[in-house]
Amino acid sequence: MTTTTKRYGLVAVCLLLAGLVLMAAFGSSSSSASPNNRSADPGQLVGATPAPAGAGGYGSYGSYGDAGASGSPSAAGAGQAGGQLAVRMDAQLGAVMTDSQGFTLYRFDKDTAKPPMSNCSGACATTWPPVLKDGTTAGSGVDASKLGEVTRADGSRQLTVGGWPAYRYAQDTAPGDTKGQGVGGTWNALAPDGSKAKAGGAPATPAPATPAPATPAPATTMPQPTQAKVQLSLMTHPQLGQIMVDANGRTLYHFAKDTAWPMRSNCEGDCLKTWPAAPPVDADKIKGIDPKLVGKMQRPDGTWQLSINCTPVYLYSGDQGPGDALGNGIGGVWSAINPAGKAATGK
Image (tube, rainbow, N blue to C red):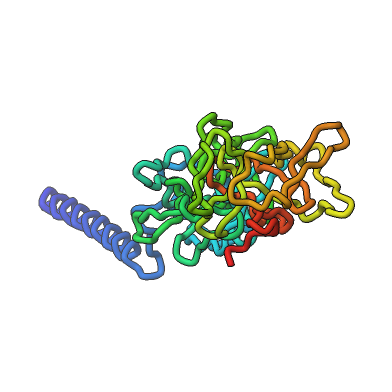
């Protein structure tokens, strides 16, 4: 009897212990399922900061500048029209393209011009907003034939200059800034022909001095002298109409700050590096221009300079070749010359 009682007692103790274990397990499960104790998303640690959108393969954007920069003339990454484009003479870079607000335009070495293609998107386009073609026009000094467009991956149409897609830089906060020049070794200010603006104060490509000039449009149907002997003639520019050009077909300019009576040049020093004085011409080597308008002036250093209508005449080192008139309108004081010896307007 004693043995049987002990056996039943042990069984009761075991059943009691099993019940306690089951109750503890049930309580733990209920606590975990309670709506007041929900766990964080299993894909992210509690308190973790999500990775910034757009970081992707650009990392910290080191080669593109600060992606969080403010002061850009357009919304971050959205792109914006350039308005009426212009050419600005920069003290370090020479002739550079700007939008209508005076902000510098840039090109990217990883893009291509033939065919035009942009390789800047996502985070890159936030730091370097593309200039959109719609709403962009050629202003004074800009050769409209150099402008084009390329369709971006998002379907927007981006401006191209000489085939190269054009951008602004988010850290340029004021007109005339060139903080994007040289960033990452792949970004450069745009010269008027789409090439890289070059340091040293000179425009992107000096005007070539080729021995064989381009054939200017004939001013009359009279027999013309051989081209090699012509030193001053006319050509027809698509926007400006007939303008005067030198023996190599390069456009000639007047400077509004010069004076005619007495005849005097106010372009000296660095000005002459950008606007070289045009040399005098022989009276018998003029074509289509009234010889009475043509003369010469002695400069303070003793050299002689061509004059038209009693006003000194210059070339523009930013013109890329025969027929260019990129200097017209720069600063509101430089103008190509029409057959009457006045500022060319195309009217």
